[in-house]
Length: 535
Image (tube, rainbow, N blue to C red; front, side, top):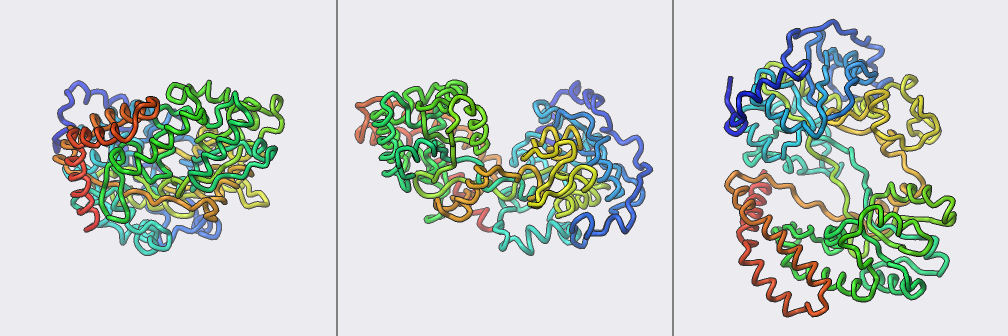
C-alpha cells in the first residue's frame, strides 16, 4: 500500500473507522444492471452527450462515489437508477454528512485500497488535493482528454467562446497536472449585490444612483426624508469592507489581482482602500449607515429591512427580494425590494467553472472519468437537475421544468428535489441544465440577471486567478497573512469609527503593514502568478 506523506500521520485507530462506510471496499466488483436500449439512449430523447459512447460498460462495473450529503436514500433514487441504466455502471453512493466529510475522506485516502473511485465534497483545498495528486493518489485528467469528448469540447475546443479560456489553470497543480474533474455552469450570473426599496424611491421620485457620489446623495435624501432611519443597513459585520470594496475592485483585506499591471497587490495598503474607508467613514459620520453595522445580527437586520420606513438599501442575496416581499405582505403591502446597480464599477459574479471530484488512480479511473464526462454533457446536466421527462418533470410553456409532485412551484429548492428524486447531489453534479429549478427566476430575480447581463449596471468584475502555491509559498503565507488581515480589520474599523483618524493615521498604517509582511506575501502570489501565466 502506497503511503502518503501527510495523510499517514493519522493514527492507525482512525483507519479502522473505514468499516463505518457501506460500500468502501468493493466485495462485488460487478452487478446485474438493466441497460437502456439504443432507442432509449437516443440523444434526441435524452439530450446531447457528444461522441461519448453509451453505455460506458456492459459488465456492471461498480463505481463508488463519496459525496457530502445528509440524504441516505440516493442509491434507490430515480437519478441514480437512471444513471446506472444509461452508463451500465453500478454507481454506488457513499453518503457522508458534509460536516464530517474531510476527516472521513482523509481516512479513506490513507487506506488507499478502500478509497472510493471518486470523491467529491471532501472539504480539501485545491492545494491539498494537488499535494496528494502529486504523491500518486489521483488520476491525471488531462492525459485522458481525447477520451472525454464533453470535457474537451467545453474546456479546450470551445473554451474561448464560452468565456472560460484558461479557467482550468485555477485548479491545476504548480507543475501543470489536473487532478480535479471540473464543474461547469452551476452558478447564477447574478447572485448577490445591492438591493433597494423601489417603493420608497418611487414614492419620493428618487433616481437610482449611478456612481459613488450619487450613491451618497441618495442616502442623504433618504436620511432627510426619514431622520430616524438607517438608510443603509448591514448584517455582515466587518465583511461590509468586502461588500462595498467590490466597487473599488478590492478583495477584502487580502491580496487582489490588478489586471492592468498583471501583478498582485494588497487591498489593505492600496490607495483605493483609503478611498473605501473614507467613504464608509462619511456614511457613518452622517448617519447614512446603521451605527450598529458591526454588531447587527441577521434577525435585527431583517427587522429593520422589513419595517415600513427604517432601512432602504443593503447588500445581500437575490433570494431576499421575494422573501422580504412575502414577509411584509400584511404589514407593508406596498413593499418592493429590487436589485440595484453597483455603487461604482462592476458587480461581482461567480465563476463559470469550479472544482469537482478527484478520481482514484487505478483500474477504474478511465470508466470513472467517462462517467463524469457524461455528467458534464447536456444530457447529464438534464438528468442531474431535472431527472426524466414525464417521470420527475414536465416542461412548462416557458421551457422551464415543472417538477412532478411540486407542480406550480417556481424555483423548487435543491434539498427537496434531492430527497424526492436524488437530483442535485452535491459532489456528483458536474453541470446544471438552464431549464432547471435553480435558474427558474422570479420576476425580481430575472430583473437582476438582466440588469447585469445587459450591462446596464456596468457588467461583471473580472475574476481573480485562483493560484496554486508550493508548500514553501504556503508556509510563508501562513506566517504573515492572518496577522495582516487581523491588523487591517482593526485599523479599518478604528478609522471609520474614530473621528480623529485621517491622513496621518493612514500613513502610519502603511508603514506598519509593510513591517507585518505584505511584501513577503506578495512575492509568493506573484511567483505563483508567473507559473500560472506559463501553464
